[in-house]
Length: 284
Image 1 (cartoon, one colour):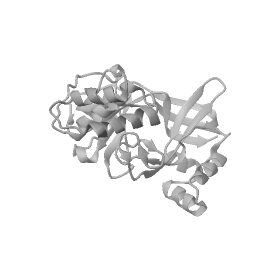
Image 2 (tube, helix red, strand yellow):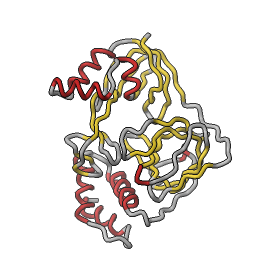
Image 3 (tube, one colour):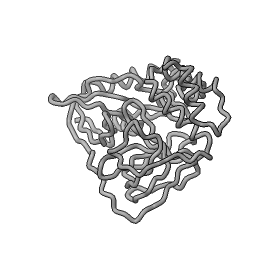
């Protein structure tokens, strides 16, 4: 189906709204042609964006388990335990972290403009009408204005997804180092261009996407700012200073590569999708 027909399909799905067809068309072209997102996923992404922007929409949100999440869901209700809370990367995020049930663990993000109550590690909650978002083979739950978070009196047992290994860091993947993210959806962006929100003022972040090899298995992993600082002493502020001094953002990645590549590490993290989100790491 061509993008013109896809745009018409999206507009028809929201007859109660006066949507800007041209804006939808431009977002479709950006997702499909520039970012190579499959058509079905592009349509779901834009529908979720429209629903998020128009808080009066009340989508169907069935109660499901994390392990049951699939491409067929746009909005769901889940009952989970909070596994880990992260410090928000910027003011547009009220809270982010990992939640889980007996079938798996998933990342969640609560947007500041959603004005929802904050959750606490170790407690159980019912997340109602939350958006299922898929990006690069990983599912994520987004809490928006139409969502509801309620603490529940349950002791949900979370599936153990913790992995530990000793391995060599053999490769650093693309989109590593001093990167920029969209301030709205947190996607990694280039030239301040987001596939969903268009031209934005990107915000800085520091991360490494790497590959570990223990001789038997390989592990794709993500090191956040804290993990990088523990290994190299370089945090986000220092990385920005390096980029300014060198007049080159790639100078940060070059320095990190020199510090971490081809060395043995003891790693512990949480397996989410194809990646291990590193919780602790030390050089052997």
